[in-house]
Amino acid sequence: MLSFDELKTEVDEGAIDTVVVAFTDMQGRLLGKRLHGEFFVEEIEAEHAIEGCNYLLALDMEMEPTPGYEIASWEQGYG
Image (tube, rainbow, N blue to C red; front, side, top):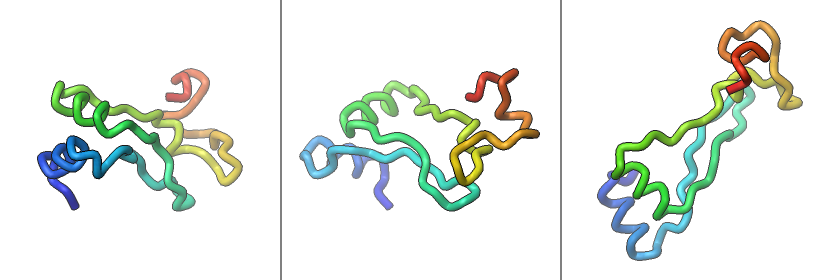
C-alpha cells in the first residue's frame, strides 16, 4: 500500500493517472468512483472529503434499493 506522499509522487511523475475510491457491497461488487490522480491529490491536500452515496450499501443483486434501511430511502433522498 502506498502512503499519500508516495501516491502524490507517482501521480506527479505520471505513473498513476486514475485513483479508484471504492468499497465492496454486500454481494462483493466493487462500487465507487474513479478520479483523475491530480484531482484526488488536490482534494486531499485541501482537506476536502471524497464522498459516496450511502444508498449503495442497501442495493440488491439487481442494483435496486432494498426496503427497510434507514440510510437509504425516498425520505432520505437515496444518498
